[in-house]
Length: 224
Length: 224
DNA sequence: AGGTGTGAAGGATTTCACAGCC
DNA sequence: GGCTGTGAAATCCTTCACACCT
Image (cartoon, rainbow over all chains, first blue to last red; front, side, top):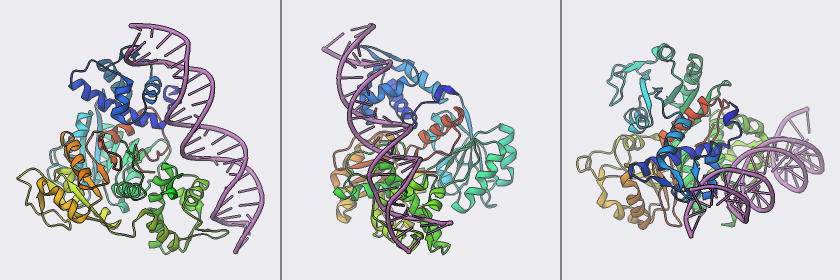
């Protein structure tokens, strides 16, 4: 893994944003793109773009820029987006249901193979729009994860249940958890978690607004 | 605004996380809390916690720690969470509906006063669980924002519509936009945006997992 | 002993600026 | 002329380590 050893985490975060813009450019039949253009689209400096991309190889052509098709292919490879990755979703409440039918995951080659909930009322409900058929009982969690060797999970359950389920997921072999519950998950080494707390996100924004921080932000989460 | 001049953005991001833990401690009747405890709960070092809090004042008591009630009150004040702030939501699709009924906003003293959508079919639908009564036509956007002097908006519309609506919001006086569309919004000075792209979030996680970055991440979005 | 606040040191990331290529 | 890749400088953030308080 020495490959991605010295790459700054912020650079990795920007990668997805570059790719998003490149895919747009591709749709618009642009053949090449400059670091200048990419930088404006993502809200960073052009030097930053060049440095970020250079961490992963030399894709640019002096005097020309980056060839869109090449770069898209290369970045998909780097991010693993060239392969289908299976994901499970736990929690079929309001947020869970929205996530089920969210098309963005599918576009990025994620495949939602199962949805779980422990509310007996919800079990058996058709999983709206999702590829998998029905919402399943939480009891089946380990079996499904093991059978399909699922490495990624999305957690959309109440805060009180999150830690316990995270542990079950880890034990069953899941390596990455995207957590929407407002708690910091305690995980064993080898398991990565990323928590998105929507209320915290709004609170951040509110703070920036009231303290007069004007500029477009960046990350804070993942974006401009 | 020289007050929040030199405060590192990452420190601001952690503030909400500290507060979240402090409110839990409060619920558990803990009278004081040490930087050590806070640090473990949020996943940073204890020195970091002390430094972060010190940016905003001297709240600690040597040999004792931080008095929970005091610190919670002070931090709510700093984050503006001691006042009710009005928010509008644009987009009543899957995600929009989930956000409408999300209780986390309310807990943090945000008040969702209106929901808009331009789909005539949705207009008039009761706004699920939300405080406001019905989904309104997008035509009413400016009038409502101006009348209630709304400063914050949540954008849950398709990527193609996001930029245009962002401009309308800014013109009507909105100062902060929490954007769920997968585009970087181009905004005028004085308007802050924070974009949460759920697919990008999952992609990040997937990358970290496959490259063997094990540790718990942090931010990337907001935490752990 | 246990705990905070903080200058100074150390690391990490971003920006600069330029050599070199098309 | 336009544009990339990259060392070096600058900046930003985190960690150390310790004075000081209780």
